[in-house]
Image (tube, rainbow, N blue to C red; front, top):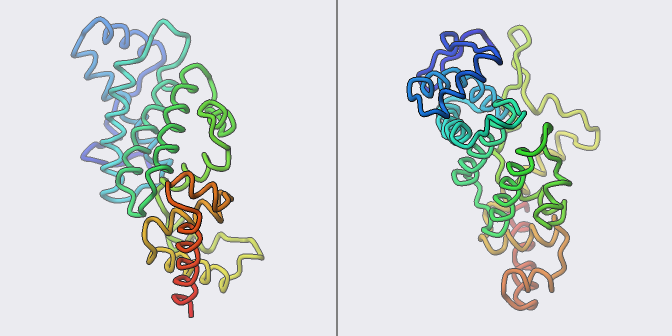
Length: 257
C-alpha cells in the first residue's frame, strides 16, 4: 500500500494516527456524548476501514462504494463498543466493518444466488460477528457452522456464493513492465489451460439456466443432497426435481457442443 491513497474523496496521507492511549481517552469522550470527539474518532479510524476494503481487492467505483459501506460499519462499531471490556477497538470494529461490506456484496452480487443460500450466508456472518465479540481471534468456519447448526460444507459454499467474483485476467502485481494476472499464478498441473477454459465454458453454460435449475444443480452436485432432500427443501416433488435436473444437464451439454 502506498503512503497516499485517495478513496471516496479521502486522502489517507492526511489522516491522523492515534496511540492506544489516545484511542482510550477519545472513546471515553465519545461515550460521554462529545460530538466533536466522535468526529475526530471517526476520521482517525478511516485507515481501519481502508485496510478492510483492501482485503477484498476492490477497484475503482467498487472500492469507493465499499469504503462508504465500511464507514457505516465503523459507525455501528463506535455506537456499540463497550469500553469497559478489555478489548481493543480495532479488534471489535473490524468484524462489523467486514460484515457491512459482505452484506453490500451479497445484495449487489451480479450472480443470482438462491434465497436459501443467502439466508445461510447471512446467518453465518451474524454468527461470526457475535463470536468475534467474545474472542481475540477470528472465528473459524467450524465454529460458525456449529453455532448456526448448519453443515460446514454448506456454510462454506454459501459464503463463497455471495463473495465478490474475480476474473482470471485480474492483475495481481506488476513485475517490471509485465503485469502478472491471476491466471499466471495457477500452478496446479491438473488445471491445464484447456481444463480452465473448459471450466469457464461450463460456468457460461450454467448462467443460461433458470434460477430453479441452478439451485438444484448446486444442491445436487456441490452440496451433495439427494433428489429427495432437494425436493423437500425447495417444495416440489422428486419427479419434478429429476426432470429439472435432466433438462439442466442437457442444456449444459447442448451449450458446450
